[in-house]
Amino acid sequence: MTPAELYRYDVNGYILLKGAIAPDELLRLNREIDAWEETAAADFRAKAGGKNAEVRYDDIVNQEPSLVDLAAHPVLLPYLVEMVERPRLKSTWIAFKWRGGETKLHSNHTPSITHNFYHFNGQIRHNLLNVMYAMRDIAPGGGGLQVMPGTHKANYPRPPGDGVEDMLVELPMQAGDALLFSHDMAHCSRNASDAVRCTVMYTYCPGVIANSFGGDRLYDEIFAAAPEDSWLKYLTRRANGFKETYPQPAHP
Image 1 (cartoon, one colour):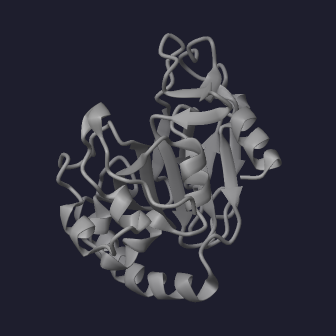
Image 2 (tube, rainbow, N blue to C red; image 1 turned 60 degrees about the horizontal axis):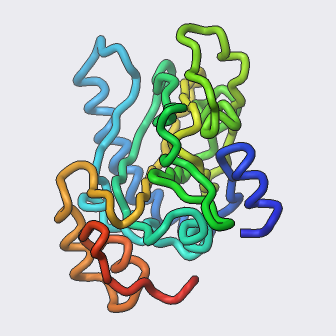
């Protein structure tokens, strides 16, 4: 990370990496995602009358092989190792939002718990870092993430109701962009357009924290198939608490 990127992230709680996925790679991935969108549309129609116009598939990397390599994307790795100590992949999902689809305002941040996001020995440290890839363009009003910059370090609880929603900033994205943000920063989204919002999410945590969606053996098959000494193998290893000795690859 450059000093400017580090400063922006520390102050705001997010950073946008433009064009993280190359055009040819994006085209290849979207060929596979098209089939998921068809399935999602059918699932959405099947739940006609549902309150939320969104379909999400958890643990997507164990269902769609083409999305595995994004977990250790070369553009992402320098940021990941800068901000998460001995990082591991925690959870993944793909989500489709139609008009009216929304995610309510939320965060992990609690003023009384200071270890979720912190600065130690000159480095940012996270217990949960989110990386969201836009697979299609997300125009203003199209369901882009809305964030409250700086709230990952708030010293007071967020007031209930709509008293502070004027602080929200919408972050439009272009297909191939990656948005890195602290889960401690208050965030939400709502699609008010006719375009389908398609994103893929990867979350990362320190090696001592277990996986979501299935426990510590969740990525065993990906781990076994990954090249030796690769970052993909490292990120999909099992957690081993504070006694972990699995060697970290060379700095990307």
